[in-house]
Image: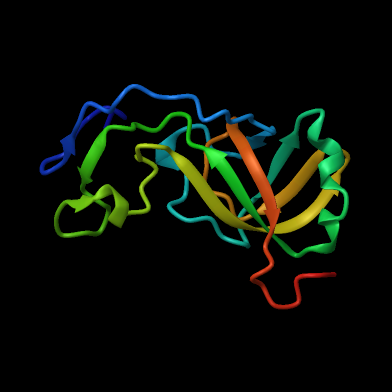
Length: 152
């Protein structure tokens, strides 16, 4: 299925023109997946190691991150449609509203994943648990303080 195909029961709208939210991508995510059909529906802490390549001048912001076991990775789903309001989710018996699904197709395609911190090599953060395409722009990275025993 092409990324712009609409399945039975789905509804697309014409979104309003975008406004500049002032986002700055802080890096790029490297994963083994180059097509949406290959990408897992949910990341897993025993999944493959993925690389968060942090751009200058943000590399100094990694100081102290190595003390945590998990991080929240916030990214821009740059290849996702942005116009569906009703979608057919996988495994669901009928269309649902976009806000009732974890689909990457959203008005503002922002992804958030909890990831296990494997290590830091210079300006690259190694994690497990992502479910995005190779080359995905990185918006933010935060320690996951909701996990018990997060500080190493």
